[in-house]
Amino acid sequence: MSTPQPADAAQRQPVFALQRCYLKDLSLEQPNSPQILLEQAQPTVDVQMNVESQSLAEGVVEVCVTATITARIDQRTLFLVEGKQAGIFELRNVPQEHADLLLAIACPQTVYPYLRANLADMITRAGFPPVHLAEINFQAMYEAQQAQQAQQPGGEAAGSTLN
Image (cartoon, helix red, strand yellow):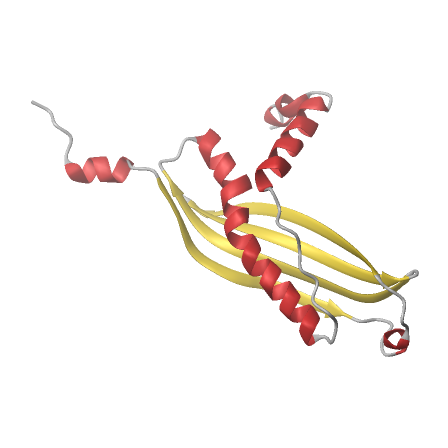
């Protein structure tokens, strides 16, 4: 009779856990202050987002969400703030297709609210009304990236053939 030991079964259970969430980088620039602060015009705001991940050790991954917010009046920069919020996640015994989804969707969704709060706080502390970033549907973002890769010549297969 060969029944699996409880320890063996526990070692094979999928694990997905946030180990740590931290602010990795934060910067603010006001290149045209103080003159531009006297203007009454409504600024235009541009937001750029990026998500990246890197393996730190076997089963341990860092996921970073970066946002760059640029506010301009005409062509002059009122302020530029960039923040990078990161999380260290443990992923063990998770099939690769599920790990890809966790890294592209669940991890950024976990980290993003912290980034939003930190950027709004930084902008307020700089003397401006806070910019509240909208919620992001990371699943839709991931699906759009997958569709874009599939439309490119060679699709995903091109990446897998590189040595």
